[in-house]
Image (cartoon, rainbow, N blue to C red):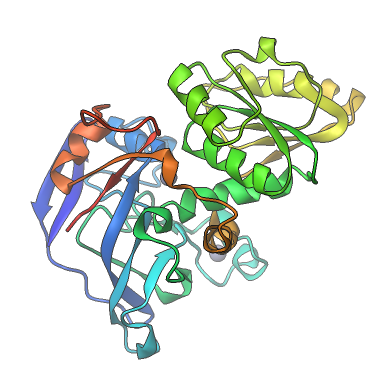
Amino acid sequence: MRAVVLTGPGDCEVRDVDPPLPGPLDVVVDVERVGVCGTDVELFAGTMPYFASGHTTYPLRPGHEWCGRVSAVGEQVDRSVIGVRVTGDTMIGCGHCDRCRTGRHHVCDARSEVGIRGGLPGALAEKLCVPAGSLVRLPAGVDEVAGALAEPAGTAVRAVEEAHIGPGARVLVLGAGTIGLLVTLVAIDRGAVVEVVDHSHVALDLARSLGATGAWASIELCSGPYDAVVDASTSASLPRLALDAVEPGRRVVLVGLAGSPSMLDARELVLRDVTAVGVLGGSSGIARAVELFASGGVDPRPVVAATVGLDAVGRVLAGWRPAGCGPGPKIHVDPR
Ligand SMILES: [Zn+2]
Ligand SMILES: [Zn+2]
C-alpha cells in the first residue's frame, strides 16, 4: 500500500510499504480522509519537541486526524465491527497504569500517539492499524470530511468544557486556526457569544461567517473582560494577555503551543482568582464531537480548504496551498 514517510527534516516521500496486519486487539481501517495539522508540520520540520525528548524519531509515518471503514480485525476483536465507519483517538495509553485506569490515558507516560509518538504508523496511508478500543463510531449523517475533523473537534469540545461557560457567556478565542474555529463553533452551540482574535483577515472573515460576533486583528482591540478566554494560538505573548482579558474568578483555557515559553505572572492568577487550565488533545472529547456533528449543532466542514492526494502531502507540509482552495485553515487528504 502507499504511505507517507517522513525520512528527515524537510524530507517527505510516498512509499510502497507492507499493509498492516492487525494484532489480536487491533483493527485495520481503510482510510477515507485525513487532516494535515500543525503537529504534522512540526514533525516534517523536525521542530516537534518529541524529537528532543526521544519520544519520536525518523523515519516516521504521520497522520492522526482520520476516518475510514474497518476492513480487518484481530483475533480477539468482535467481527461485527468489520465494515463500520470509524474515527479514533490519537492517544494510545499503556492500559494498566494509574493514569490509564482513571481516564487519563492521554497523559500516560508510556503512551503512543498515532502518527506522532512511539513509532505507531499514522493515517496518511491507504490503511491504518489501531487498537479496537481507540475507535469512535461515525453515524451515517457524519460524512468523511466531518469524520476526519472529529479528533481536532474533540480538543475543542474539551477546551469549551474546561471554560465552564453557559448560555450568554462572552468568550474570547485567541487564534482562528482549525482549533480556534472549532472552539468558536462549539462555544456558539452552547449559547456563548464568541469573539475571535487573529492576525489573518481571511481567518477573521471565516470566523465571522461561522458566527463570531467580533473578529479582531489584535487583542488590544477587544473590550473585555470576558467570561472565558481560550488561547488556541501559537503566540508566546498571548497567554499572559489572555489573563488580562478574563473576568476575575473565571477561566483561561490554554490549548495552543508556542515555540518558546509563555510567561505568566502567577500572582495575577491569585489576585484575580483566575483558573488557568491546559488541554492536551481530543481523547475524551472525540465521541462528544461526533455527537455534535450528528445532531447538526456543529458543522465543522467550512474549516477545510481543499482535499488533495497523498502525492501532494509533502508540498502541503512545506506550506503550499492548492489553487482555488477555500478560506479554511485545514487541508484534507484522500489517500485512495
Ligand atoms: Zn492534529
Ligand atoms: Zn498508562
